[in-house]
Image (cartoon, rainbow, N blue to C red):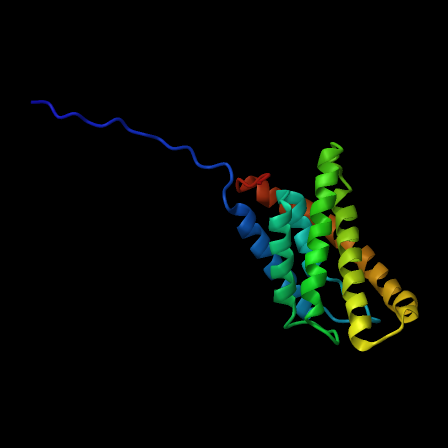
Length: 189
């Protein structure tokens, strides 16, 4: 009597792997470390966390829910290392910045500009501008500062940090993209 041998079944790996989680977690961790050790020079410190989630957002094209989660995690992780008068403001500001980055990536893709070379620069700038504006507005409300203080003192600092973060995001994007794609990453959602 001959035994029937079952057919060998092969299963293709799912396209939507969880590499986006790994790259996001890794870059957020790097961002938190750099955020913690970066000195404050003239009231300006780059926000490495924003640069890092801008890069991951540009690489992975997350949906709004993932972007919200990324922003929430980013905000929570920088609360302990915050150098501000109201660290909890980081949670709301990083959610806003991450959502702004996500919406910009979606806009670039819908306009067929997903591979635009300066997209990381623009995304890093606007994510920082949104995050910084939300954070400084919260700070003004909590501290009871007048709007003129925000406009004349805080907004210029936010703009300087946004330019700095835009340059950091652009400079780091290609090396991170190379690692991400050589290890099998790609668009997910």
